[in-house]
Image 1 (cartoon, rainbow, N blue to C red):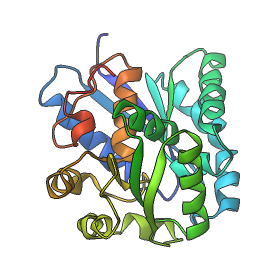
Image 2: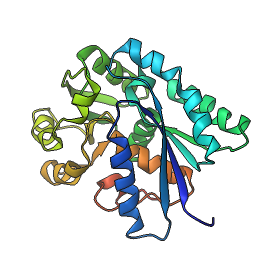
Image 3: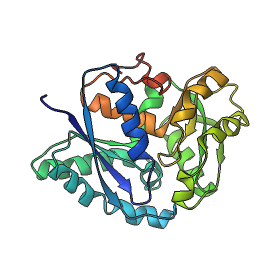
Length: 253
């Protein structure tokens, strides 16, 4: 390919994290690999993290996919995990197929990665049978996320809901506080700790500290999304500073 890869993201209108963490991960990759990237986004309206607002937001995703395909992006990321998981078991498959079809119909076909599907796939790549996780959502939505992951064949042995309904307040949560929050969970039999099961709750700066603290792989939804985007582009999935998944051990998984 001549020129940089174009990374497209469909983001909730109040999301301010995926347009920082995803570029940060790809920029870290640029320090060790020759490929270069540009970043482009389209927004769906959402302010409160409720089932009703999430469903209304998802209905706007096809418009966003069409806008990004106008720019001939090389991959699209759907940057809201709970919106997908709240719409029923396995919905990430239907969403990815639907949004990819939009790009085909627009004459600029591109693969689609949902953060929900990326997290599930990343857990499989890491061989996780049991996990613990931290969610910022209210308890009913957190239970929905846990149920979705369990339906995908991964046991969630312990988890916590931070119960933050306002999406901007989710983004304002201090990522350093996630380590003691995760430490309060029973991680004894967990294969992987999901430090942030939400692409709006920042966690990137704490991932490798958490791995050193807990002595096991630590993952976030944004890191999982970056891994799957790189693989969708046909590139080795590797980036310094982003934990085990992007360490290089799973570059071709």
